[in-house]
Image 1 (cartoon, rainbow, N blue to C red):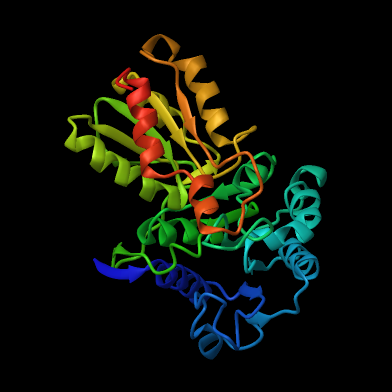
Image 2: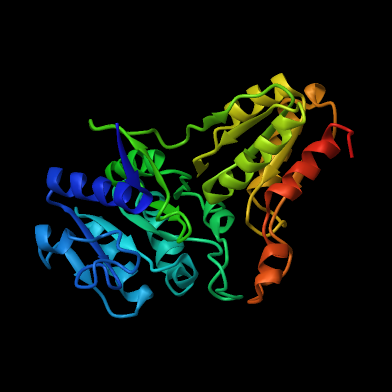
Length: 326
């Protein structure tokens, strides 16, 4: 095992796959000469050259469309958005072309493309630069949506995403790029659609994904000191969702708290709670609860950002509520 930053794990995944397959290329704003806005692609231009690591104008609609067309014609593009907030101007290409082409062509045309970049809040970015569109994209048939929480998962899942013949949305976070974690020396891949038990417990199930897993871990530590052992399920992918792992955990703990950054209406937590009440209702000893981002545009002031986001304190309170301790 070796220790890598999150950004280094992503770079290794892309570099290894580009060495393996000459049809793969990386394209996006500042990915080449500047080594990536967050230095994820540092050094890749030197190794692969400007035909495979391609700087673009600030035109997400344009280069997303080029990527979709390239994928339809046998290449395997990795399209980097500087943030998924900017993907909104390219959403027609992602949803109406990439996601639907296989079905509309009667299975004749695959679109093996990865759209990747950071999602969600990252400090004082305010209303138009700090949004989580995870559940938006997960709502789209034809897409796969991956949101890893650590360097190990990030590398294994990105390699799988690049090899997938379907379009994959791969969501990261500016606040995770410097996170460090152990990564295997040898090649490995993780399947899309399989959750991971981040922490075993017996008293309550906490389901989350992406950077919010860190808040769940912090809450679990606080709860453990009070004699409450929480089991954390890291979904890793939110389309498809590993419902079986969540249900199995709830049948063991009999309580459920879902945590995510997205706005509360129609999000992944809503879907998880619905599925659990369908398949494990008789096992629940309390109504399931959700801890989400506030139902408002994200403000700029740090105090308002803190009030908006899920945090360990809110998770602890939710757990105590489902355990009838609050």
